[in-house]
Length: 130
Image (cartoon, rainbow, N blue to C red; front, side, top):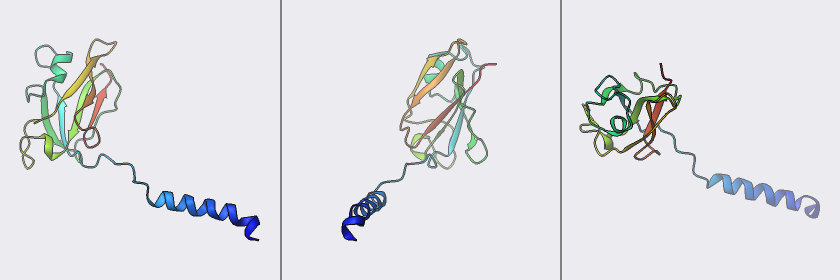
């Protein structure tokens, strides 16, 4: 009986042991502060504007529970959600701090976000061009 079922039993034991010690995939629940890109400023949706973390371009709009991210169509920049480590004041954020944003230009001619600092904790989304 051991010969017949031994290999299967050993395989099950190995699978269970490996699953028990595998770290779960990290979620983006840490990012709570939502900033929205303001494309109405001079220069609009240019790459340099999207990459500029100044409050002139990225406005604090609220927390993720109240302000969801955009549909993520890569046409133009929309919103980013960041952790306390990347805002000027976690209890009353008004600006990004220590954040780097990278952007590219879409076929519509508008820039969209392609990356941000610490993407394990922070998230970004883009939107469709109008």
